Length: 310
Ligand code: UT7
Image (cartoon, rainbow, N blue to C red; front, side, top):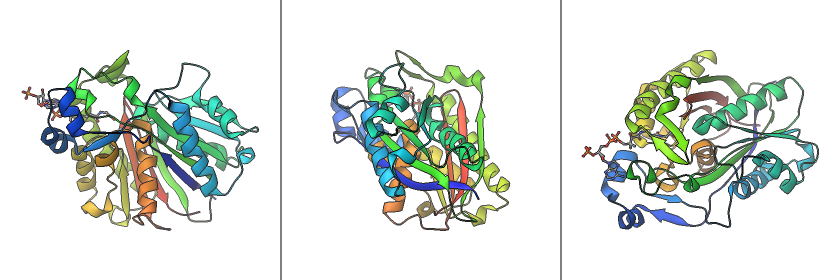
């Protein structure tokens, strides 16, 4: 039996920063941000909410949704590039907060592809019968490493968390295929030097190519064709990048997840946050074939083809 996602949850901090708010702080416009990125607003965590708090709220929802107890979790994987502190890991902080006394815990650093790396790692442990339940969280407080003087990057990012419980699911459902990859030669295009530094053009070109290729690759590895895909959940980095992946798969606009207008780019959290909203809105149903695909600093990328349902 395949591993799949038996419970999901999300958290975004309450404070909202709109494009109009940004217009007051820097030389930008709502029109530019909407047209060039698709972003209208983003949630920003204040000083009282750190990465581990957001991870905690999202994890609680996922645990409840999966109908398990914290003691049933064998491993906690937290994908983040904005931990509360370098160590101890956010995963161990989360282990204490939720009381997952039987769980091993570690963080994963794969930037915006981190949730994909986490779920694929969890799948290996679940399908080898090492752990019955693995908690995977993608969480970022990017606002604390955003350079608010740099309009090229400051308008893009938001804070939030998404979580999933990875466990075995019923026959025919679950993770059908995956792809992970990295190209360290592109590390210079997106990195943290106290604050985020990005060559937007280079990342854009890479993203357009990689999102399409990875999505096609997981469809093929699952033994499926593009027409079999019911819904695409791309990393919410830029609506133009997302649409290019969608068009490559020949999918209409309503078959793609779009939450970027509300949350901006939440890096490792963007795919699980979108998944939660899509499930809640009824856009994703049991037995739908989903393609999840992300890319990020590293450079890294990852994709999953999932037949949805427990
Ligand atoms: O999770 C992965 C993280 N990163 C990404 O996914 C980012 C990928 N890259 C992108 O999304 C795009 O490169 C951006 C949205 C960041 C920028 O779009 P672009 O089409 O690459 O534009 P550009 O950087 O070449 O800038 C075009 C113009 C420039 O002005 P000039 O030189 O043509 O006069 C910029 O200075 O837009 C200007 N500009 C802005 N104007 C208003 C750049 N940022 C802003 C801004 N407001 N916030």
